[in-house]
Image 1: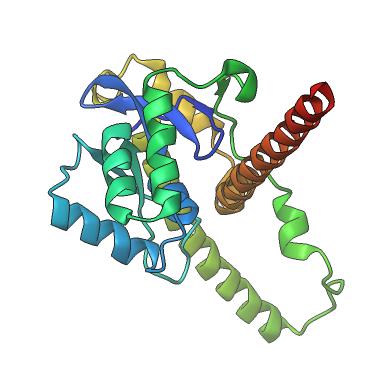
Image 2: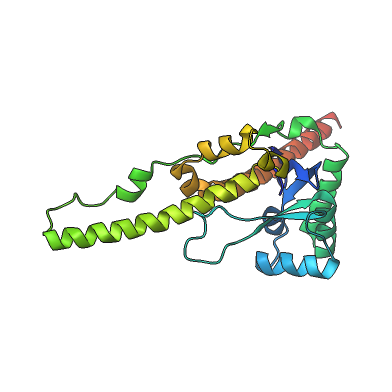
Length: 247
């Protein structure tokens, strides 16, 4: 399982993680899919590419399963963290302008050829922003009213049923979070604090906010890309203006 550590991006977020017990640079397949403007839906596209080109799980990519709070009522959506070699190949075989641009970008990332002034320095991966669970559940609702004993009993029974369902989901969420944020060696050592720290740091607000946090990251990545295009455009215009004035 890839262990998300740091992130930095200009076009597509690139971050360091562990794969086959080695530290490697990875990117998110969904971000690459969105950047290249692939017409097929993400799941169909990535599975077809993996099958056609023989990519190997644990060597070329790692599957990242969602936290349990993300896919209530639907099939779990799986994310994929790709090595830059795999990302370059996917970019090349897409055979469009955005794919070629992505491939050049990954080559630059590998060779440390990007100008450090044009990308943000690596920062620790932020925890998903927590939310006020009480406000989420109760905001905008009417104040409670008096019920009959039978009505109240029915309400209590249903509340307990929902609470049990929530317990199962939260328990699985924590299990998946532990799997994502610890190594096999840490999990096999009962004295290692990492697993306990992951468990204790989990909050209901974090779990409920996780999907929104991922969506916001995609939006921010797109915004950074658009900003880089705008900065480049105005820099080119300024250079052209200066050259014209000198002439």
